[in-house]
Length: 427
Image 1: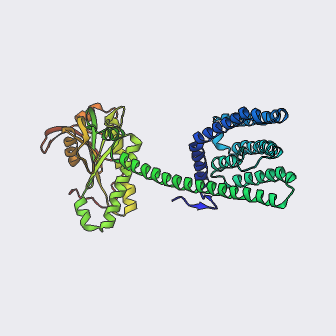
Image 2: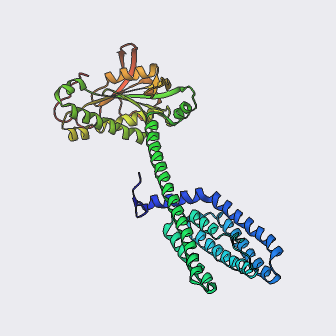
Image 3: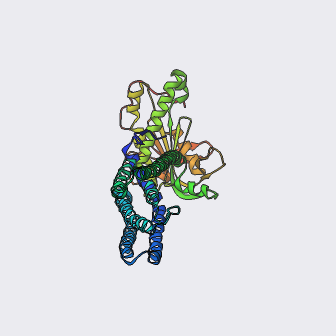
């Protein structure tokens, strides 16, 4: 829950966002209230000539016309683009309406007294209607509302005091006003608190939704997420991509020599480094398999030349070996294999979903990785032909790959020194 300090959210940005949201949601009600107030003024302007004298009617017509103008201007102001930023608009308009209603009431009360009519049924505009209007429109701005109430009380006393000849009448008037004002303040506070609670809950739900959205988009491509939400099958065919397998050399033997915590820390360093390189070269991370990292260029993430993107990515990952050695204090070696060709991608199952790729291209890339030199890469002839930068690769080598057969490949080794000690080639 968002922390609240002195009736407001502790974070100024959250408070400002709440004020904008709350006022924007209240806009339709403010406009309806304004229209209703105009209709009341029109009704009085029609009825008054039937019961009051010409002079009184002229004064009432002017006051009611002013009420119509102020109400209309107020409604019009709510269509101003920056209206929600300025609660002072409500403050000024409602204060003006309160003063005008007070003057109308004076004339009508005076007329009833002149007729020596009993006051059991008061035929005047109830001033509480304006106070209720203010309690809603100024919800969330308690200081501004209290200032409005103070000015409204001042106007009330200035209007009432000159005509009260008995203390009892004055006290009854004050009690009447105080009771109504107390209720309006309670309504204002209740609307504010409930609005803040609902806003804080909505903020938390939105933050949680955003976190879930990030997690989903980390696991699945955006296009696949939309199709899953629509209940559609996620299956795609890609005619020409470059698949990259990068594996940590001697991981099995390394796991026997270091603690589990250190081992996880090493894998995290490797995978996080690979993630940064993938983002830099526009390569899509598919998944990690044990100590292996599978990525694809030209799949869900577009790339101009998938072979160049894949080779650049592999070079960048292999280039971070020295830094990982220094950081982890352990000899680390990596190997990369790249093959280009068609693949099929999609999402299978309904639990722990992930976007995966299948096909002979993926299998060949995995086999090539096993033949690559330590801290170097092996690419297929198909990748070599697509690449524009072939400077680091040697002469073609024909290797027999398990389950694949003879494949022509090109190998390279990194330019940096291998460091002290040796890395076991046992996977």
